[in-house]
Amino acid sequence: MKIETHTINNINIAEIISEEVIINNTEDGLDLLGNLYYQGFDKIMINKQNITPDFFDLKNGIAGEILQKFSNYRVSLAIIGDFSAFESKSIKDFIYESNKGKHINFLASIAEALQKFAG
Image (cartoon, rainbow, N blue to C red; front, side, top):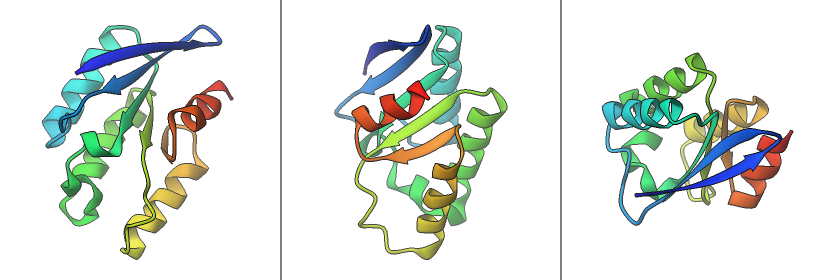
């Protein structure tokens, strides 16, 4: 895993770069949050492919637990990828509602995430 730093308006943004799944379960998500928060990052970008597919099955609660921690610590998270393949109404609604807020966003590109983070 590599972390690329972006800085916008004196805010440090971590871009997670990896070919592997980084978040396999709730603990992995919390570890990532803690490590990056400790390093001074206020916002984090991670690709959809770096998150277990189980995250997108809302019934198991992984997404809810992880995203609640990000919200509690006021660390913004952008999940980057193509979400059009999801057929579940619940995940589509979840993504739609998340994108209305500021802390958790599901976006198509790094550029879109940086623009969102810039305000």
